[in-house]
Image (cartoon, rainbow, N blue to C red; front, side, top):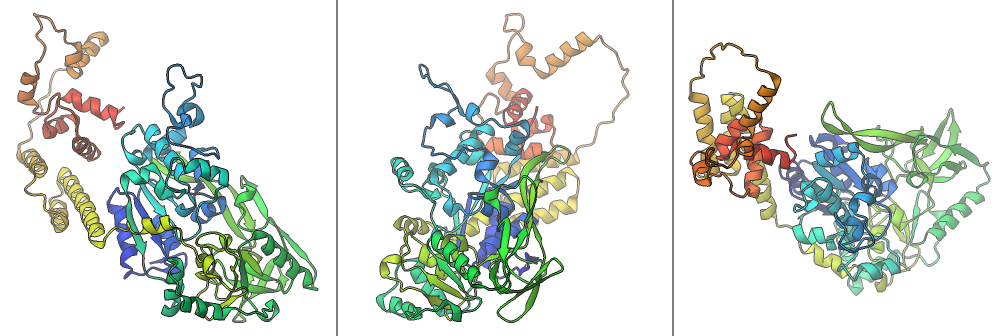
Length: 614
């Protein structure tokens, strides 16, 4: 299968394991991988194949547009701020004597539609999670618990997929913000959030690198990533430094800088040197599309011979996000760009969409609604770019000016954008102090889930899936389906000797073999409406309507358990899961009563409580 012009690799074990984990389990998953391992491709593939109510969010506007989702703050309506554990803005009730009476319901006022989306949510994808602060993830967890009415369950029972690479750029924070957060958290990274500490997600790393082919260069990048570059290896890297560096002799080569001011200066200076006339291309903006989400300039100021970079993948594979070229002419509302191989590419305007999620009552599912669009040529000036904005891009030739790198991961991000060691030039030598990896990131990396544990989780998930399909087939009297799905289930887990299997088996054996009673026609007796209502109430709520008097004796617990073994016992998590399963399979309340050994009223009451019956 091809996704976004990329042919999927069926032999990529980690990629396929991650898909199985999302499709067949309800576990929280952290999907990571070195630069160029296909994290973005994974999300695009998942989006086209998953059959669950899914929402995609990201920490920044551009990341959200690229992922095809919303920003975290816009979807959850979170005001930019710091949040600490036991924050008053996240409480359900105010304390006695507290002058501030506000609660989570005042700070987060959701529409009926947004509440429906949240309660129906099955998968939440958080892309670029390495840039998400720990407190923000805890806010998401709290909101899902409260508004899904499942306060004891992490993320309110929603499966969460976290995609990112903590070895790349960390969350951006001011010093004063960091000082406050560090009183409550071990680090600013998402993995230090209270919810992640509680659940310990399945940590799976994509291993196969597609961006680079040279194993020596891959090994060098791994050393830089882990901050264990030897003196000799650093000396070898710095052989790429050119003291008499001259930008003019490099064509289709982009400079990566650590500071934005230098990038602006280089691009403006290079453009001004060209003697060709300046042309301005204005974007077409329709509906809502915030300035901070623009994938390129609103007003593109370009010249013939200007060096540009593509900022979108082309559906016909003519260009990709990060490809460098030079403008050679403009004709018929098309910009003609020549790449390094002298191929001429006709560039037309492209459309980016700003979406929000909405609830479709008729279909009973979450859908995307287009709020606005941004139409512009998918290019921008590209003699230089910041390391931060290069994240996720691929270049064949780069000039890296990262000798003054100040943040952990900057050198790794910059150099790993390049496809080969031959395409790398250093504008400044890289000192050993510039190669930094956060020790807390290294510690978290050691929690990667073993292959055996991942395999076990997948097998458990697939077993549950096929046992469920077996029960569905039995309900539909599809005996071939019962056999086929049962055999599939046994390949992953043998439940034959369990009490739960025995209970299901006996129920269906009895139901499928007992003769159906012949329905006799009964004389319809019309009763007054009031009497009918009373009769119905007595049938459905016998214990409520029954008075505990000497003349009308109340049921005792012992008597009730003669017919319903589990009567008045506390509901377990396992039982609640079984109830959900039976209800979704379409069993009637009476059938569920027989299977679970509980009173009819208890079943109805629990269905109301877990919001499966209104």
